[in-house]
Image (cartoon, rainbow, N blue to C red):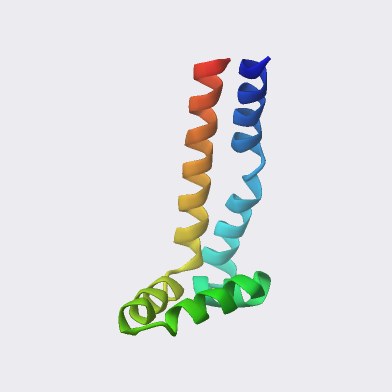
Length: 95
């Protein structure tokens, strides 16, 4: 039973994040945005949380500024590759 659940979780990780490919294409070709503007627009609470963490000291402020400056394309592509790789590993291991 556990193997079946993990195999299905692998399939979910492979196919559920396909929208990230669409976001990456949009961020790359149609409207180049940074990760900071994406988080502020679509995940407002996370943007505020990261700004709060950035206000702790100079190091966290520099780190948050660095992360906010990333192109959103890199973030979408990295997240898609990581979740798809984990999904493929789960399907091969427990499938």
